[in-house]
Length: 343
Image 1 (cartoon, rainbow, N blue to C red):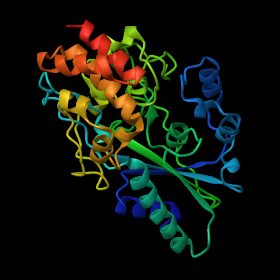
Image 2: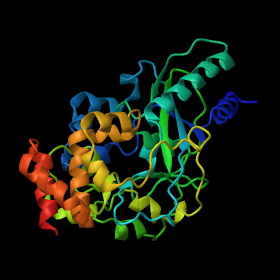
Image 3: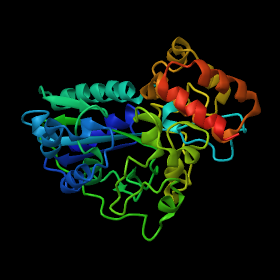
């Protein structure tokens, strides 16, 4: 059996649903990435525009000297049941964030795969695992490897499992035969994600203007959220799944990969007032080892205050008033003042 097929079999055993190979060349959408940066669409994610990151995305050999192959891997995670709508007093957390932190889960599985590849080839190999932790245009390499296509909402989408996917890569100096790039797409003339996006953050070239994206605003953004977007946040506490939920390619719900199936550790619809009232040590304890910590305590409480304002819960009014009177954090206090103004 060809080494490529042996590697795919080992990847499957470890819980990856997709595995493919591409040459470590400059990714085909590198120029689009540069234009995206020049337009400021990365918003406050300055790490996307650092000179060393821009260079590394041009050539994977800057991350791993001698790199010849990018092994693209995908693990599916379970989508939320669309029939389980939250109650008025409940918030929303994006599906991927309900699980143990994917960075470590993917890294551990990919490192195991690298060990097995070395055993299969019976020779030492140089490798570097990238689990959303390195400057690499991973969707480009996944598409080149035949895992799927980049949909209008910018998500890597696979015909077999849709777009509820975590991606990671193994860069290696091992020469492997590249897969056949995915050139077809189920998107066709469908524009449901563009129409459904609450803030119209999806751009015509299949990229995202992060300055308008609710996922960015509730996770990565630090500071005050622009007034125009606050009503559109609804009761979201962390992230936004709208463009994936509406996608026809995702209508076949999956339980996820063995790496994540049945592994949810958080309630997708936590109580909004309880979330707002969490002390910092309680926030850290509740969300330890999950992606929700990425929002930080300030961002999470800011989001909760805005969500309470949109929900207009009578039971939360007193807590919001107390916050406006005594909260030392300007960002949280501002969100609480806005929330009270919605009653």
